[in-house]
Image (cartoon, rainbow, N blue to C red; front, side):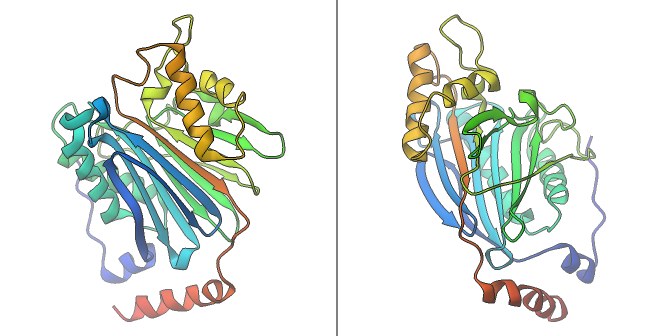
Length: 284
């Protein structure tokens, strides 16, 4: 069932939006790293069958003069070349709706438009997160997606966010156009890390044949050195492969890492950001 969103007036849209720029996005094979105000970021993605494109979608944008960073990791039902067109469509939908200030409106718009773009029975799980650098606050919404892992530098421990279960408050994108989405908010200290991953990791199996799930991934993560996240990701994936030869070969596999750093937004940009918004608002 689809719902049609009532169009907003120009002034209503302006009050709800900000200016965002895509830093990186797609559903192709990649191993990339970036630095934005407040965060060091790494994205690893390998489509099914060593293909170039798949159904895992990653997206990173910088908004409000760098004060806001928005991140998406999504997993379209299916995998590889078969899921690639719908993955590309989801990336474009994210680009279209990323400017909303309220993260819940971003996810609701993603859901409504993805439902319209996908065929019957197709859906996508997703993690949508927004980081506000001045307050170091991270808002995380999981839409039917395996829970990310959170690493706290103070305790030097990884654990699943929200206890390691699927967030039953939120269904996947494309299931029901009118649903609302809940988010979890947390503060990041320097060195804290959020790790997102697609279900290829979650559904991998341990040496005893049991599914790893988030708790099992946290156990592996806690056995690895996290000081070099690029090395950490490769070691995490290799440990999973070593557990069972079928792990990570039957689906697209993606890992994203966001580590809090001490780099803030330039003082000038922090001061001028509200004036730039007002200039944009009244200049429309």
